[in-house]
Amino acid sequence: ALTAGIVGLPNVGKSTLFNAITKAGVEAANYPFCTIDPNVGIVEVPDERLQKLTELVTPKKTVPTAFEFTDIAGIVEGASKGEGLGNKFLSHIRDVDAICQVVRCFVDENITHVSGKVDPIDDIEIINLELILADMESVEKRLMRVSKMAKQKEKEAMAEEPVLIKLREAFEDEKPARSVEFTDEEYNLVKGMHLLTIKPMLYVANVAEDEIGNADNNEYVKTVRKFAENDNAQVIVVCAKIEEEMAELEDEEKEMFLEELGIEESGLDQLIKAAYQLLGFATYFTAGVQEVRAWTFRKGMKAPQCAGIIHTDFERGFIRAETVAYEALVEAGSMVAAKEAGKVRLEGKEYVVKDGDVMLFRFNV
Ligand code: GDP
Image (cartoon, rainbow, N blue to C red; front, side, top):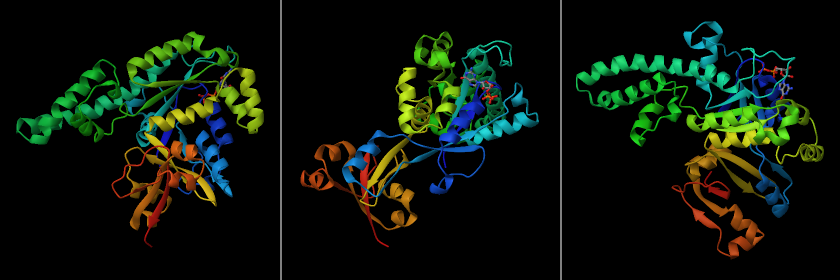
């Protein structure tokens, strides 16, 4: 399964946030596609549309789609030099599909900061530099080989060499691969290189309890946002400590708590949604009287592949999919009404599924 890794320097609030994730999390047993591992937290993806569909269809049960976070502890300065823990850290990052970097934006004299003072940009740069150095090493190794082959007029090598040089230049400027502009062809080559800094990055600014209601005025948060713009990364703001407390509350209590704090959506829900987007995920629904359910797919997947997420038989025997857009269904008020209004389409094997499609698969067994 695709997963987002949580990283950060020591004492920035990673464990606190990961605790919130596992406390709020769901039983892995209900989600056969998810990994069972103490370092993996499985959460439900909040989606208002699921609630609406439930009201419309009144099924026996409603099942949200799930999403995984992996806790990656142990970044240290010098990780790219490959000493013990550092090496392991980098290989864990290689395994995740997106990176959520927790950044300390709270001041608390009782909690030591590794560099002695709170400075989010400094912190980000320490981690990013380790990733850039690791990528630099892979790119240089590859460049040596590829340059030789390019001299012998090997076509593929000749195409790859300038891309590697472009990457090396970016790394020399301490810029991640994700901030480099590539043509589609170049990007296809880059994808095969398994770079760490090409992975989508989300900065999770961890602010103090009394700052969360007014986070946009927090100077640390402002600097992180500014940094992220140039870095082709995204930012969300949380207070890990509050999230940890809130993770144990019932929905109603949670809403009251959020209101008191003056925020609309919990940081955890924002984190889940942002990471989901970052990974290029989208959601389709099945809406039967037994079960209304949300399913995660990757943008660009076609109908048979999407059917295969439910069951491999659905993909193998795929005939067609009765499809209606979520908005059209809600507007019509019921599946029958949507059909009468001609809003339900029959889609075939080549149909690229859209976020919000409500689908019923027809298949041969
Ligand atoms: P990690 O080393 O990055 O995993 O950091 P921890 O999650 O263990 O947090 C380090 C310390 O900072 C703990 O004592 C936490 O209670 C505290 N902490 C984490 N998040 C917050 C926060 O939002 N506000 C405050 N005041 N303390 C926090």
